[in-house]
Length: 394
Image (cartoon, rainbow, N blue to C red; front, side):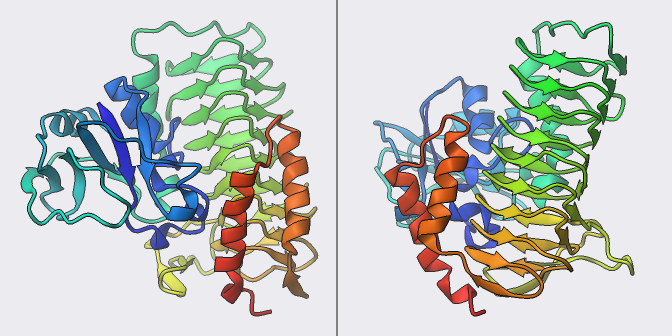
């Protein structure tokens, strides 16, 4: 079954769609594309996305292709309905009138397909969908539960060491993971500790928690779920209901709540993120499509930080701050609550983060995780730098 994920509503999901297709978002334990591929047992996953991302995320075609809305989280009902589609048919959300998937023999291109002649098959069962960037953390608890069942059903967990305390019954430890002198409470949600992940001594976890491969909780970390620590990310201090996509660090004391960090982010020691207004008012969040602030319906919302962005020691972020790609934030006081891509500075002064300098740092950061900043990745970041120039009117 050849799965091709297409993007819709990309502008509404910036800054995370600057550097990836929507289906490469992580929500729960798995990315959105992994949720589909594991359920249909198909490694054949590809993407229809913006031209500048297509070399890293190409589309691979076969005689029969199943095109999947990249923002939709797979479940058994959706998979079953999609598998029944014939060429020229599409699966439509009956209530929202949203295309969920369609089947075609054509090699379609991004944003260049007309579905008017397709026969509509209506779908009315419940499912999760990432319609707004805050959905990534707001729907993370349900996503962890569904992924936990998918990944652990019929399998036996590695044993928990005798130095640890576990309350509850929803714990799974993959091979190579290390947990010592920790307190784990899975009564409020499952705890999944991935391959070669580590929970250091003194850490206290209240589920749901997803620790992906190679993730680390440092000494005496406090986690409130539902939280996801993506692959090879390191976390310390206090974290509540947040998602780190992967290769990002919040390695020291400080609070992070109701937030999403992309890849290759780093929060300096004692960085703190406010997730609640002093007047308890509804949160409004910067929206790139609107070029203004959009009501969320939420009371709690922290920070949305794009790939390669970083904060210095003791940085303080306002409630509902949006940070673009490759920004460097530091200094006293609260910086603005929309920080453009490739911005350098803080509350007192902003300037442009020179592209060449940003690439030097990115290369060093990635090298520490045995990854290379190759020409494909650099060209993506250069496109983002040029596209976001109008935001940097300092």
